[in-house]
Length: 265
Image 1 (cartoon, rainbow, N blue to C red):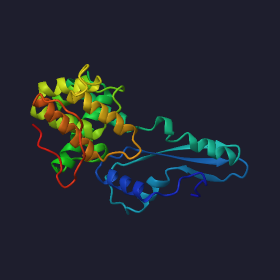
Image 2 (cartoon, rainbow, N blue to C red; image 1 turned 180 degrees about the vertical axis):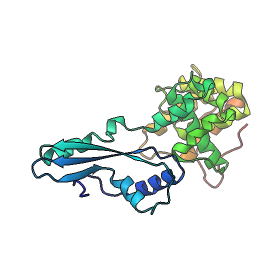
Image 3 (cartoon, helix red, strand yellow; image 1 turned 90 degrees about the vertical axis):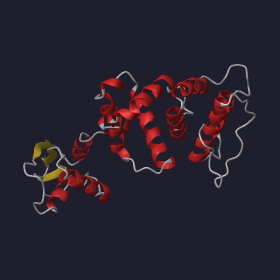
Image 4 (spheres, rainbow, N blue to C red; image 1 turned 90 degrees about the horizontal axis):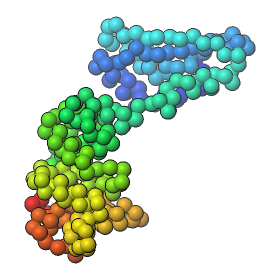
């Protein structure tokens, strides 16, 4: 069947993802469409470019029972083909990362009271720490959010829900990774410390570790030469250690990649 010129170019990555989805038995029925242009009677395929190519190349080696739903349309001329094409997989209705994270989160009753934004950020931060600091093999991409199902993370997700909000944009992924590491060491102190950081520090004491860290993070967020993720993580650890030892902190100090970051007290 001739393809409409409105169809997307074939994307090898998308073809690979579709093939894996089919072979794993989780493919939904494919929604294909064809349209008859009334000016010349030609019938074009207007949707299903990737899925039909993948299936055609599998030579029958696919799960049984897989089906395609085909809709037939008529358009007055080729110009309306573009308008028809826009109705499939609209960008405004596509699943976002937040939508997927929220789906995994909300099927866990203990996490339903946590905002979806905080829940997503908690899992991203915990996974970042497990992979980047510990070198653990953690799920990647959207698969990361299966970690919501691991009870080991539930209290941390709830903790982040009490601290993180849209008003704390400086709490990037490595910051939340540091929150995860400190919460694992001392949950009660971690809550008090990170609440202080999220609320612009330790009152009138400009040498309070929470005050110094908050100022450093805000400065880093707006800096032209932004610090690396490991620099941010180290800054959090430095301030945390000072707080654990009831010490004042003059400044965060420079990051030396060769020395890494100090142990978390």
